[in-house]
Length: 332
Image (cartoon, rainbow, N blue to C red):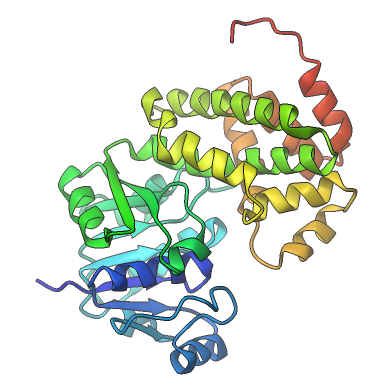
């Protein structure tokens, strides 16, 4: 059986995961859509744009050819922005190559439908192949240079989760497995929204007390949403829930946090997005999570306030004040 994996997406996280799979001994090919960028990577043997300090292992190759990337691959891993997820799945469905196993590291609800990635994958490709999601508290730059890290591989097919986790694990990189794909995906989607809130708070100068209150109550909102969608409560106490939330809310490597900081300091939405220079997933997730919460009639006040700031022109300072002034009508 082939050990080849095709990584679709050559941004910072796609590059980091491709490096890690190759580092773990897998024949890896990474596909991207920018011809000049892929040519530069092939020549320099690194992604100079996003991970200049992470040289490619020998087992990693790059290509602009979609069919070439898929040819002979045992696993296909999608690492594309959430708004491009369905389109890329459809391209897979139309490809001539047979897809044996599919995984993704894409995070976020589909904005219009409110579907999680595994539900979109089922709509486009059906249920005939094993699927999995990779998520958890990791920054691409640190994975790229080989700093100790841990992620979660979640799948409804436990044997596939174990096999995929084993194939990416090295001395400095550990993958844990889960069968709660819904919980892992909800954590990955919601933490990006909450990180914007933590960034706004810090941008306003509200301090550590406010930040940790937002993180802790944000975890409660995340859990409430996940359980309503059928996830296991315990999932949100692990790497892909609390772990990813704390990381994204507290470290300035987080694009979502930096986006929030810019808003808190007075930038408008477009100025804040332009300053990041990469996709800010929380921007899209704020609308999608808000929509899902409304459909389920869930109380998610932090998400509500972040949505109002990002999409309804609300005041960042007034949003934080309203949250901290809320009457404690339920036990902690």
